[in-house]
View 1 (tube, one colour):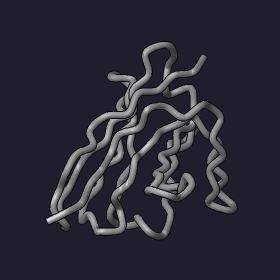
View 2 (cartoon, rainbow, N blue to C red):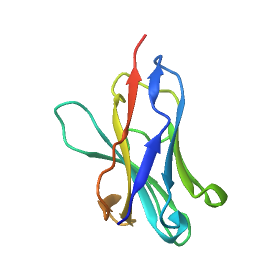
View 3 (cartoon, rainbow, N blue to C red):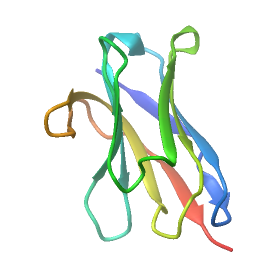
Length: 124
């Protein structure tokens, strides 16, 4: 069973930064495309970003483009989401999953179960 573990969330002031990590212990992450999603209270899962398996292409939703960066560190079997210039609309529980990144529609299709997520709070 594919299991991913998210970490790195916390409380940050508006305009601040956080780096989230997505780690796998039972398989190799660079064999998969990986997507980040977020879920705010009372809402469904929202796509955030995706990094593809083959060429490492990256995709972002408009709401985070230019502020968030997704990357891989294969030596640590980890995918990161660097979040800068955090805004009041960014707070949520953030999740990572294996996924299919569609370059034509910028849509990400999760292919593994949701994990525990990591909570991001933006407040002054």
